[in-house]
Length: 301
Length: 323
Image: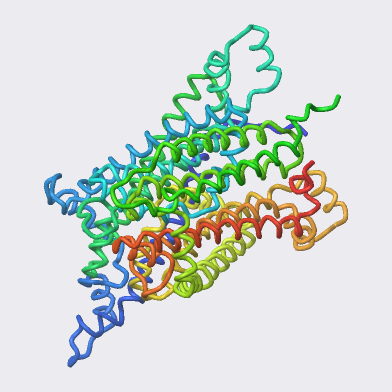
């Protein structure tokens, strides 16, 4: 069957892709407002509205939108708090969310870089050593089924008693969370070249290093980048969890925790939005590098 | 051609067993028992023994790893490597008198598991049997149900799938403080976090799985004039099984992580995550390690159980038959 395929115009593409997402987003926004009215109503009746005089439902709705400590803050409240935290305070003030983002992003990125390097080195070793492949790799694969994030408090205690504080413990936790997926994917990727390709390099009398550099590493890139996206998201969670124990004052995790201590719901929500944005930005940065690298190699990007 | 004696599985296994037997002899040395008199250091004999064991360990693992053959040889190699790691962990931690805060020896962790088995059982019930199991079942069930429901709604799919893939980049577990405010300190708030974390992977996988049936098979169903429901039940859901089980397996790990980390944010006085964070702040590291061992064993057993279940359900699928 032959069909005429005209290149879809930009307008059509927008309609095809963006419209459904926008509709869903709008739906979520409306549901959020309705939820805010519904969940805050009890508190509003009790605390905000006059108890002796009658009130109308318009007053009730208005009150649920402007609560001091709402059960569910209305979207515009979160947006306002988010915006004012960015604009009204200097960048080095702990009331500015960007300050916390910088703290969390720093340890995430350190952990990501170190974890990726460690994963790469270990994957190269595993691919070249049968002993490591048979003895160590099964443990690394099995560790994917184990909640390794649970040992974060131990890492904090160990590094704390060795005198490390600040970025180092958080980066270590982010590092080991990044390391597992990168290792597993890289072992797969380094093994992905076809037999015919490895044999051709053999006929060229290429050394192991040349085979690694010219064939295995380039072939592993499509495997590496998805793992990096997984890794950086896991590293962000690790860095935030590392900020939870009492004493941490900076970072998105600490911000979430202080918000929940003082029942400051709007603060929790704006920290949540910020951590979602940070996760998004980090993943998009990795995806951007991926696109750049793979397109330069003329790949499928 | 017959393999030389040194390259047979029997010899490798025997060598491993003999090495492990010899290794256990080293525990009779006072340095390995931690009973050296104050101020004295382990003697040259002990270090010579340790060095010998290191050589034996490397050789026995290498011998076993060099063999090709059944799957069990691979398992045996990994197991032997694990045993040696635990052995040297025990030996060196005791000999160097590493502070317990840094790293307790495995024997102490085992002892702590036995000693606090009732506490750990309570934590297990609280975290795994309540929060994880309920959250995992509800989250995966909802994800599956929504995927099947929007199977015939391409508009909704195009709207939901981008949002669902965004959630994989977002630290969802950070909603834990909000869940605690809404659902209280008990396990329900942890289950809510787990529901949120497991919903999207299941939805995405199921949608992908429902598209996985071959064109040939779908056209066969059309030629039978099979209804939508009939095609769904007889063809599309069965061929989606590997995807669904993939999501169930990922979700099992995610659920465990979600419940444990959510307990870091605030919890009643039991639960694996609560145990880990409070005992870590009290420097009672053997108990922390015990809770982690419980979590790790739970995670691996859940995964193994799901793999077995998949073999039963999708026994016909090429990925299960090993074709």
